[in-house]
View 1 (cartoon, rainbow, N blue to C red):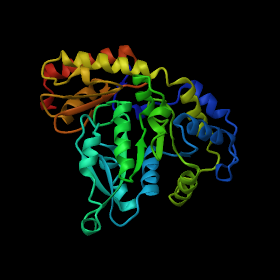
View 2 (tube, rainbow, N blue to C red; view 1 turned 30 degrees about the horizontal axis):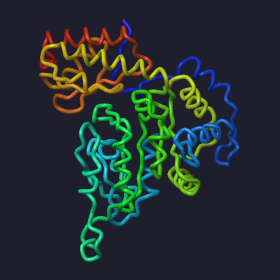
View 3 (cartoon, rainbow, N blue to C red; view 1 turned 90 degrees about the horizontal axis):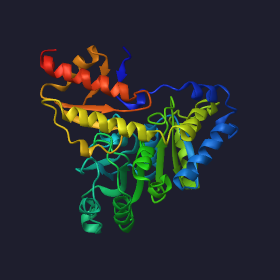
View 4 (cartoon, one colour; view 1 turned 180 degrees about the vertical axis):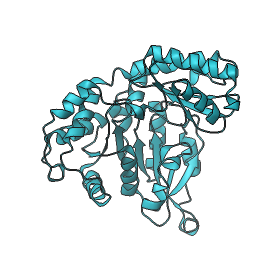
Length: 351
């Protein structure tokens, strides 16, 4: 029986067509701007996100690291973001270690915070009070939310947050790890979501199926500075067109099909809701991430599932995350539901 891997959409492997595109890519030295495939990808992403320029990077984490460093000055600057967002819990303390940033963590609704919450989080600007507090410097939005459950920020919510940030003189950053999921789910173009931010990025190694890579976009001046950090931190490559070709293939062939992942996630959520002891609201599933609670220990539940050929992730004592992607079809979802039912009947807590 085929293994069903719902641990993350990062588990995807290049399709045969993507591998052919990689093998046939025209390449050169990217550091000398001589890799035509990488150059084409960067131009494509800049246009896609509505910015002047873009930079191909090995990972989305590096996009966040460089994005934060472009805006934050070491020495007390503060980033306003949701407490469940990737820089808080999955980047090894990078914002503090690399940028000297303090993180002001908001509690959003499924990772989506409001303009009013941002306004309330702003530090005082009066000289007499300002010297006691961190400086409000940057607002970071995660689209879609990850540990918030794949929620899509509405364009109006994004614009309201940007309005507050601009009025306060703050910089803005869009973590677009699953931006294209939001685009497909909402029908809002990526440029509409991204152009209002000072920096924005899109990932290729999740729903788009590439083995590596993301691209950070911004003004020509910011991207020129981003190149310096890419070089400084060891992210500069040589014949990167081999992997840039995979990213281009994903943009060309794997965006519209994200709707299939969303449909599979909805089916998974609806099926889980029918199982005894599972706590989930299927209506809250908007894209490809399904969060639910199990009656026993989540790690034991996931171990029992793995023994039955299905992988999910434990994200808390009772919380489990499942993520759909291009390697899991409708039949895989049904197998996952059947396995979850067996585990619950047999009792995962003893595993």
